[in-house]
Length: 114
Length: 112
Image (tube, rainbow over all chains, first blue to last red; front, side):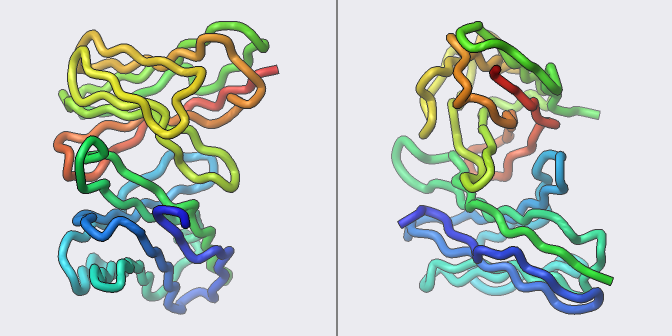
């Protein structure tokens, strides 16, 4: 089992719809979770971080965390063509010699079509 | 503005040559990382450093080395380049161990 898994995608949604991106992780003691957006040919850029169970909203983006289910998601409301990118879920390794390292999922490609 | 820069942005080299990719950050972050990104594999950690003179192996460290002689730089060296090391390489840094990482622009390396 991979340490961080994302829904396989690619995901295609119409403009104005809600895009839902999902991520599960295997390390039960992980405490910090991040969503990065990566445009084609560019570097990953941080869009959301979440540390506590529940929802965290920032503009059109909402991150949701459920530590009991080891699940983190990203919702993009009113999706725009400019949201078309690869979205990477990252989990902070929590213990021992691995502390401080980020483990990434393989990414989900999102396409928002007009 | 503080930033993290990588050089070169693109590099073509021959099998067996030694190659060094540069990474320089001006945030004064202690924590620096090198990843490679390949289709189907996402970002995989090569090496990382938590401070000057500290270096650690990541999950795909074979054939790579790093050194940390100051806070700002973490160069990545491919001792003898192989075609399997053709990839996009990203350097990242973070202020604290429990916070997010910020990435450089990436270096696209082709080994022929």
